Image 1 (spheres, rainbow, N blue to C red):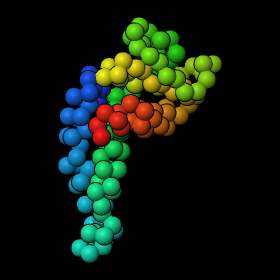
Image 2 (image 1 turned 90 degrees about the horizontal axis):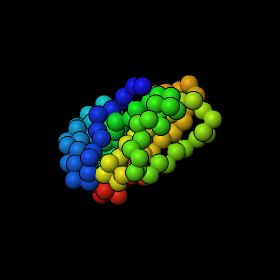
Image 3 (image 1 turned 90 degrees about the vertical axis):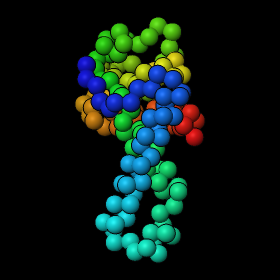
Length: 137
């Protein structure tokens, strides 16, 4: 079993706090990206909106969500008994990526065959959209 990412909020308050901590980094990433694209002050003001920075914050938070990967047996052993499980993919696939979300007493998972990094990144976006978006916004 492997672990990717660092955010595993224990409740809604911690999820909001962790989301807030990535705000300044998201602003820096957007500003430096705009600088690399040679935006002048006027173009920056027109194109870099609060929606752009919020999207960067969402993506950064999602990319830091803690995802475990391993065999189906490891996945089944890791699930808390009382949590709801939402699994994408096939039960016949041996490898599973999962995120345990105590804030909502849920586990979200996706099966994969070979592409672990792709499964992790996809599951991070799914977890943000299904679990954390409503909590942090």
